[in-house]
Length: 318
Image 1 (spheres, rainbow, N blue to C red):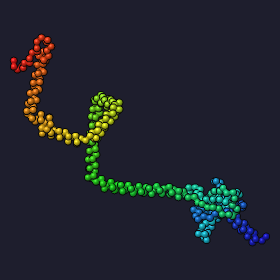
Image 2: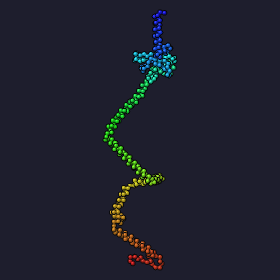
Image 3: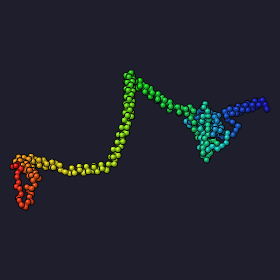
Image 4: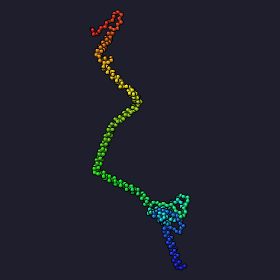
């Protein structure tokens, strides 16, 4: 073995060891039997070669290569090197996740429930988890917008208050408050007087309430009688409606007119003085006759068998 051959062999061994060392530092173990799978992303969000691949938090491999696919809208093709042999369902998802608060990226294999499995070299489904900053922004941004709106509203309110509450308005408000205080004081004094009045007349008020209760009880007990009275009154009113009042008043008016004109017996009696004088004389003589019969009944009824009865003598002739 000559000297040049030895030097070349040493260089090749060193280069191989350097490549293996660099891959090892990247997390790649070129000496192990790796299974290669591929995933296509639109954005890897800072994923690097050598980032770990986990299943349920357990490391099963590392990211091998990341290539830019110029012919596919500049998507990124990521090579997955799995050093653990297990079956991957076809509907499994390769999601880029955050491994720590510093934003270190990794891939989490979310195994599906399909009954068929991927072969080595197949392409998995892809997704990406939002970063911590994105999550914080998603939560903070609505609060920020609301805070800005609130501050704007407060500025508007303060401008309105400043414009409205000038010196005259403040004086008016002060006067209004003083008036309200006086009103409340008057109301308080009035309520005290009312309370005092009620306290002094408590017995009277109680008696009034008892009387009202008695009245309502009597009304309730007399409900039937009230209904009967109202029914009778309704019947009476119906009868009045049926009576021809106007015709009756006309007849009465005609009768009084005839009496005033001296027509008929009553009219002659009231209008003719001679008839009235004769009537008055006849009644006076009749009264004197009745009085004499009472005083001297023997003059008019005599049962004597011997003599005759006494003749009538006018009392005026004595």
